[in-house]
Length: 110
Length: 117
Image (cartoon, each protein chain N blue to C red):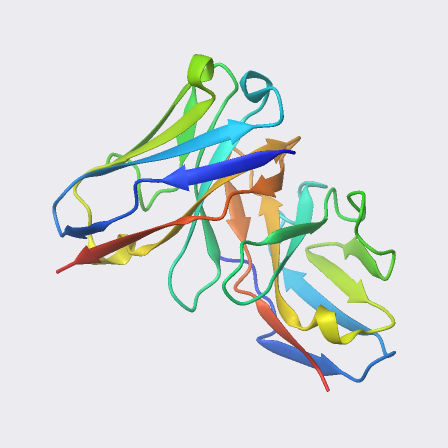
């Protein structure tokens, strides 16, 4: 149950796009299409942004998109806005009814 | 409105016990798997446990097996986490989370557990 690997930080200017990677193994990210992404602002609970690799819950802007290739999932935020500045975490089902999160990525809007 | 409200967090000495509760509203609680997820200060979330909808089966992270036990009372729309033999590394905000087909879609506001050594 090792944590998924994410970059510690990414940054971009308003209007630009950034991509956050999430690398696991073929026992988690690569083995299942149950990858989700969460946004967390300071002092708040995580918010569900992407599920099943690339699906958006209702109410999440289409600026947020997800994808997966092999053992690496990615979250892309397009048209960056100031309110997108937050911590982002990926999560994957890891088999045997266990789940694993990534260590988190701090997104800074310059 | 779909809502999860945790309670029961406290300051406890190492080796002690605590029971967390989570009351669900706005959805049919008995139809959903539920999770506990914890987040230590300054760290990312860590999955702790999952329980199926009727409460007959639960799974746990290796780090908590044998010490933490998840249960539920569907008549009371309530999820529980019994925490025994607490350690300093159990210090965290504990979130109650709804499962939606192997994804975690609704989170509570969290309750804080602090274990002093």
